Length: 257
Image 1: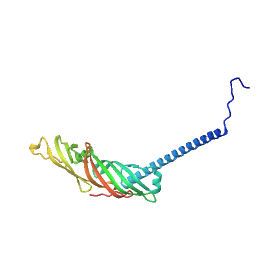
Image 2 (image 1 turned 180 degrees about the vertical axis):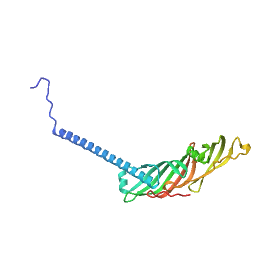
Image 3 (image 1 turned 120 degrees about the vertical axis):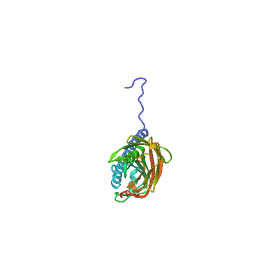
Image 4 (image 1 turned 90 degrees about the vertical axis):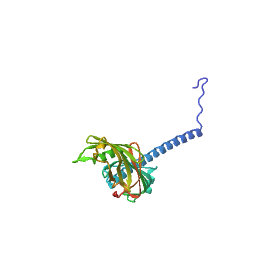
């Protein structure tokens, strides 16, 4: 039954119906593709996290580190790098490294050209550049520890930046305050030397002999067999540049003097 003024809508044409069906199928395929891509990206990121953790464990073991370093592997997608067993760039961060009595607060290493062996249980690195940071508070603690009597520490030290290659030291020994300027130099490839070049104290006129802060630290057993090359001074730390080449991450570090 029809009412006046009302017209029954014309049925859709067959081409229009087919077009809508194709659009629905196209949307479904697009959604499926996006879901698949999300799954692949997720699998890639999970594989990356696992590989970073395994590499960190291997470095900790081979370099005899007290704690697991932070490892980051660059590049996307990661799984294609795994297939080729070649990784263009990775970074390693080590914190609180004890280097023969002197604490390296932070060590950041850039590894370029990481090649994993066929069994995936070892790797070599073409080149390595690193920055080792020694905070003034950690250096001060090491220098103060040598001022002891009968194994009891009798002095405290405070350090600050004084110049391009110098530190200003203020230390107290048995209640006597001493101000000193200390030269910091790199001797050879892995030895850091601290040498007082001037000092003053209220007892200077009395010719009283007080302990000096002269010291040498051979930073033996540095990870990856790196060689120290250059010093830089910031308001809070001494920064040491280091390099290495043809590094075998599966082998233990060796001490050098």
